[in-house]
Length: 259
Image 1 (tube, rainbow, N blue to C red):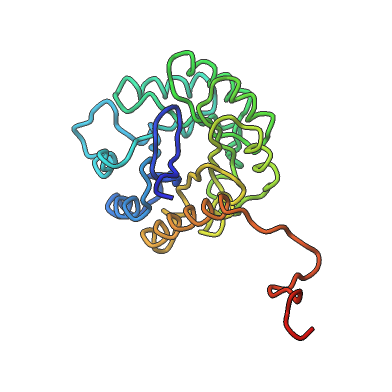
Image 2: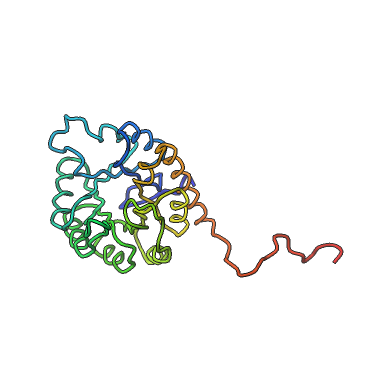
């Protein structure tokens, strides 16, 4: 498992857990949770960072960039133009030319606007960005995003922050089967078993924020998620036994002496 790394756009990551920076009780707790998670990629909402005056204290001060790769995201954007502008501001400020692309279509569900998302993906890819779009668990949309140049596709497991777990496991299986780029389950994870299940379905990685930041003990939950992602990945590679309607004896009777 030490050599089972995650590869996105030519960059190698040791962990298949991607973690966020919002909703923690404090930046100090966030830093401890990040360390416990073992993650080496962290997503940061561009709008939560004062990129015009980096001299002021920022959550970036609590991220060890020698260990963690910063993935800016366009959280809070509701149009393609808004998301494109936010991504470009982040790049100009020196954050990264990578972007977790979010274009939200509805304030209550926080579901993506896939039409706007596709438009933004096409533009940002042409502008030299490595685009990781957050989308619905729709295999057709994921294929279109890949065709548009996305470096990975990030279908939701359930609505953001809901903690409902994977609602459409078969969709995730289909997306993984046909995708030529990494599939990262993003949003909806509530506890460690949800992360394990996502990985068992064949996801290449899991991205989460609320499940860790909103836990009663974020640091302990971060460690639990680290182990859950590793466990699910190992189980996926190992290959589960087929499901059967009836029992099969663990110790076959064939060949037993005295029969």
